[in-house]
Image (cartoon, rainbow, N blue to C red; front, side):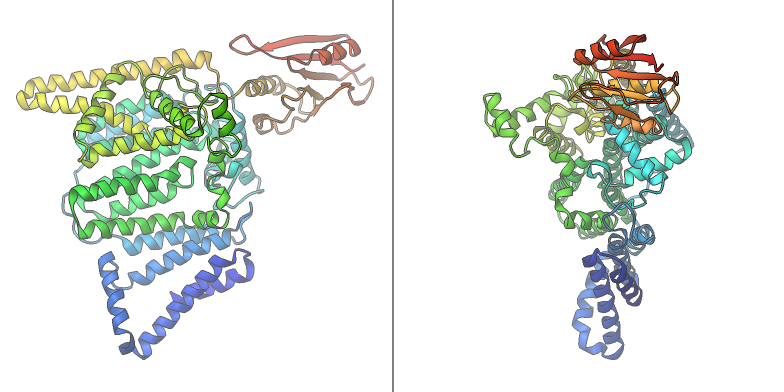
Length: 635
């Protein structure tokens, strides 16, 4: 192992400008080689050190040569950072194999072999069929007409699609680096895999979110089944299948929907480990913690949330030797999978919160004037935003350019059961199953308080599995109590519970598909302008001369959805005096000029100079003028 790491480190030093990780791997290889040499020649001199290392290995379950395998795994993960580098192109094509090999070696070294303290609960064939059916239903709700609902491909989605196309076109191959808006590039590489299959389309970049959102449904079943039993699992999974906010964010090309999926998988795997003492479940939880960091910014709070929850859990369960051993192993796996990105952030600390800083209340020079304008202090403004975020659960309408739903996260029949579940959690707060939702709500409120546009649903996507849990708790507990009095009446109560959840599901589906999507306001007005232009230009010749007059408001390519969907269309921005360039006079070619509202002088001049022509106006769904289109033939 030492020789392998020495060779890797030495070769990376020669080719990689990312020197510290490369030197670290080289040093680790030298230390291992030196250790093996001393052990071979003079083992008596290091008996004390061997004893301590042996105790640590025994505690972690590193039997035989697993200790060397673990060091190899960590070394490979560190090597992947040096091999990947900071740019769009990897320094060495071994970057990805190093990363995957490091994760695999770490998992193999730490895998569990001892018997579990509780038998695993077997799943029936009927259970699997039901879960597959529910997942397919969730995928249908998230994937049906995904290209037209939402009808605007926002600029952020277009930017994500363009970054994915860089992988397709060979302009980028570093999936361990950073992409658009300093998001980890792994997400954009996943988009590119679907773009390879479905082409340069809206469907290709949105369907990944639909898959992630749908997979959160069986993950929620796994979690709630582990917490409370099968009935709670089915109720929670059914509710999440139709939850309007989770469906919406499963229909746009943005990486925040992975919050719901990763958080649920982490909790489900961790709880399975706690119940069964199964080491591999802990390792799976650690793997998901590490991978979650490659998606949306709010996932950075997950380790803090989990540490707080585990601390409360440890207080309630007392000291357990195996618990801390398993948790340490899970932490090592999380570190191994997160390693290349972590080392990148250490080298470029400004990147870790770059995205958050663009929507944060703490941006220097912003919060002070904003607070003064509202007649409050910066702290008062943050507390107000926190309170408004809390109101967004059931009272205040959701805000933001993504999802101005017209309703809170919860409405209708879901609200009373949510508050009953919340009260029950406060009553049983010492139980880890019930203090987890409270911690998650608190973290979400803090995130909202530090963000603009509260309550903003896109920064509340850790909540869907927790909301499902809170709504299910009173229903499940009521059925349990009734069943204890009379089994026959309990069956009827269970059917009523499912009926109530179906009512909630119907309310959510009607709200999203019947009320929101037909009248949606999504993205921005400029985004609507761009999509209307796309609808016009996709039927024109790629070489069609196109001109755009937007003043200071926007330019032709200011919304990236247009170059993503129509890469061959080239438009020219015109400024006063709005003279068109000479294009083959007398050719009889038709020219298009897009003119935004507020550019009346340009409209008059163009109409006067280039006649005859055809002037038309385009409006959005709310009847708001988007732009004027002037068509004329160059005589």
